[in-house]
Each structure stands twice: as C-alpha cells, then as structure tokens.
Length: 257
Ligand SMILES: [Fe+2]
Image (tube, rainbow, N blue to C red):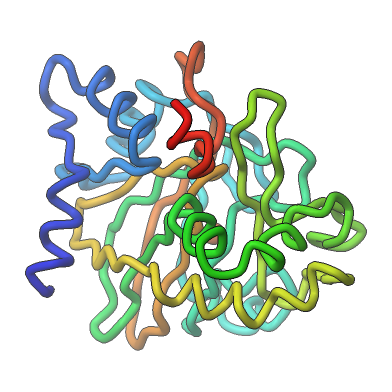
C-alpha cells in the first residue's frame, strides 16, 4: 500500500465504534461522497452497521438481509451484467444504473482480500466533471444531453451527468457492454475514459475494512485478481436522509457560492 493510498483511506476514516459515528459519517459523506471504516469482521456486523446508516434496497443478487456476497462464481460471470462475480477487472461504474432512481449508497466490506490484485477503487464524479469542464466543455455538455445513453437493457435512457432540480449534478455510468451511447454523448466516451483513469483512487481493503459511498457521486470498480476473494455489499438509502445533498455541486456553482 503506498503512502498516498494509506492517506486516502485515513482521510475518509470514521471510527464506527465511537458515539458520534453516524453523525461524523454522514458529514464526511456529504462533503466527500465517501467514508472508510474498519472492525467489521462478519456478516452480522455488516448488517448491524448498515442498519445504523441505511435502509437496504432490494437487489437481484441480494439475500433477505440485504447482503450480496461478491465472490467468484465460475461461468456466471460470463453473462452480461454479472461481471462482478468473476475475477476480471471491473470497470468503473455506478450501481443499478438501469433504474430511474438508483440506490443512493453502497457499502462494501472486505471479508477476504485476494492473494494477488483485487484492489477496490473509487473515482469521484465531481473530479471527473471539473476536469472535463476545464478542458473540454463541449464534450462535457454532450455527456449531459438527456436520453442519449441507454443504461442496461431494456434499461434507462439518461445521461452520464444529470442535472438535478436544485442545480447539482449526479453521475450514472456502466461500461460492461450493457451501455449504449448515441450521439452526441458517444463522441465523448474516449475522453471520458481517459479522464476517469486520471482520477482513480485505490482502496485496497484489508479484512474487516470497508467503505460507504454516495452512488450518485462516486464511481467504483476493482482490479483483476487471483485466488479467493470475498466481499459483502449492501445497497440502500440513508436512514436519516433529510437535507442530504444530491450528487455534487458543479464547479461554477462552487465558485458562485
Ligand atoms: Fe458495483
């Protein structure tokens, strides 16, 4: 683990055993879109921690307690939309992009890190947006054109960057073969990929470590790996979501604020 990676994990860390953990986690999530934590060593503890923060969303792959076990499941991973159950690199994406209202939050906890590779990573949509705004506003505009990208099949027609009613932006993306870009958004995809790769931040989780991220702001993915690897995932919405900001603020609005 590099010093930078360690600093990135540490700068978003909340001790979930402390009395003010939920308040602190919510504040850091609102500021950065990401919280890291540790000390969660079994499925019961994952469900218990999630219960303090999230109302779990139902998901195709989740069990009754809201947990999806992310592990290698052989040939299942060959089907479109099931790449998470393989050992290959998982391209940066948002969760449940085919839904009109994807779950706001994603919690991932490491039960068993891979022997080689398998590092989780995140990419801040606000950083991608700011980079595009500074260097290629025309292509950024193309990525905001409504109903130019189909996410999933039959899926949802939307855009990578979607303005919200209160002037903020939310991000939606998948690059697993179940996306269909039309013009003008299609022209921007090579640049989008290049900009995303500039802003990848690795979170090589150890056993018991995890993250909670804002699925309307952050992309997530993982490196390819070898050997067994097991993660717990819970999707949901914040229990106390009043006043929680949607997505992220675009740079012009930040300058004007
Ligand atoms: Fe995912």
